[in-house]
Length: 426
Image 1 (cartoon, rainbow, N blue to C red):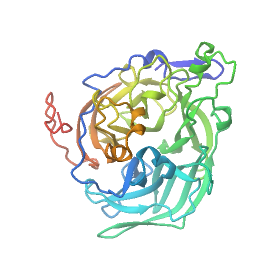
Image 2: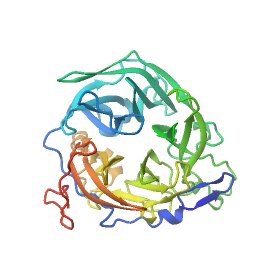
Image 3: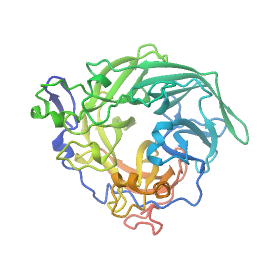
Image 4: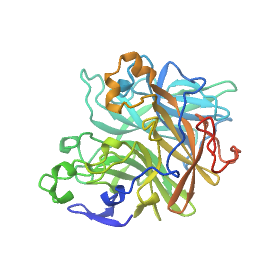
């Protein structure tokens, strides 16, 4: 991706309309079909956005043989489309990266906001630090959609031979809010969705950073997007903050590292992997958040650059890394990529399936029991992705919720032949 200039905003990496117009399904970018798992590790809750408990260097933390993931959850009795209105962060633990047991809610009260949205988790020495999005205001009567980025510190992971527990006392502190200049405030928003969320911790060359999803301010009367006010509403960006002290509660906003003004409104859950000196930046985005005139998918998108601050260019020419099959376009969402030896692995959640000709907007008009039946609400099969420079390829998938550590053997790939199960190696 060339470094482009969005009028009024200076030079930075941009995801251009020309690049996004190249998005198309190919054998290299389509994920295998997903079927429901034989067992659900937590049938009492909906599970969606999920992230790994990581060491400061980005590696998957192991604590006395346990690995831990954190997920957004809501009671499974809720309509799936309402789950964000009651989201809380829950932890799950596993000895083998396959069988996950429910640790329970991460916080014992005191979390900020009326509900918590996605973030990241750091095992810093023996302290658990959770960065998350506080949505709305605590104790509000009517739900609001303001967003603040929060650090929760003081947590401890207690690991025994049979199970894991997470304990406080926790301290919750707002660490980032939009400045209205580099990052749009909710009062400035003209778009369909306001974003200032999804903090993701990253340590690079001795410095500590947070990446996050945001929007670039586009004032009325701007000549961005040829002056088209509708196109200007699609103004997603990937924000950056740096800690001058290394303290997980001390952060300074810096310029965005990518914006998508005129292209896409929502660049969700940004995260970075460094591989052979290149910085691979990944996001998730929806079909409906692309600007008018562009046809994207619910998919994993990615970019590559020579440093954290870029400039970045889109992987595979368009940014598309992995998407759902045409006959199951909403089967998975919210991918998180991590390295595994020569491959990349991408975990996500099992979203809506068995929709037939229905679109995502039709789901809310189904009977309530059908809305629940057609929502997976659990961990999806883990994608295997090959990477070579600025090209990637979906190689196949592991089982639902299988999250191996580096060095763990993966099934041998049989190139050119998809598994009869639909999501095995091919």
